[in-house]
Length: 281
Image 1 (cartoon, rainbow, N blue to C red):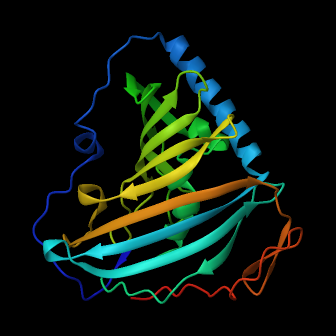
Image 2 (image 1 turned 180 degrees about the vertical axis):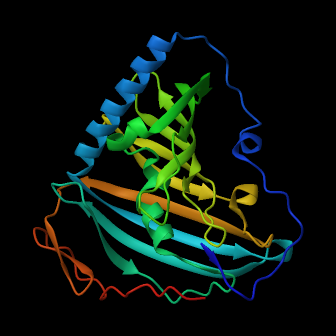
Image 3 (image 1 turned 90 degrees about the horizontal axis):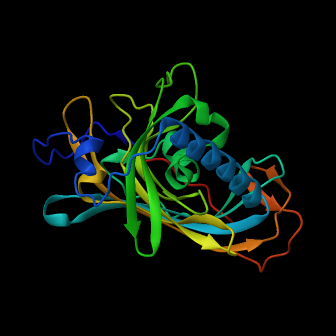
């Protein structure tokens, strides 16, 4: 998100790091050898690759809302984008916008990087094809509901230069199911950032679909996680809620016409003409 020139300064707020965000934890340290850790990471990369391949055979809906928050918790603006998503056989993501009212955000503008993160780092965390660009720090195991999870802190070995590449990488924490060896939860943010383009910390939970793969279910960023501290020292607070639903098999081959996605293989019920999402305050 980029800060507008006229911005509400909420207060002097300390920029908390990810270590503070994860302070409250029930992780139990269980020693593993480096060989065991390397094997887990290798299996996770393979499973995430299988998951990405499987996702090519599914279509789903995504409902995204980003709100700015003022004094006393008052909502001061909103960006909404409801979409139908699919992937082609090459893994390229296509989006058909179903509903996108005029943004009422006054303190932020939605950037291309924000839109990329909605369909990239935020729901999926790690791209298995660039897994070798990450450093993994094994923390232990944590039991969440009925799941026994490996917990890793993940950081890029080298932060991409935004002037030279559009590559977006994840920094944060992942929780990996110790049986399926797939990511079931992630919490972190996309980088690189600049002094004028900041991104929230996003927590994403996945759900098991068709008894095989863990697909994103919802993503949240609230409270401290949604505080964006810009290079000037000014702070904007936001809330972000993203829901992923209606996963169903039946990949569509698509083509782009006038920047809208056209589904060539299925005949859905008529819907209103998709609108382009304005990127404006």
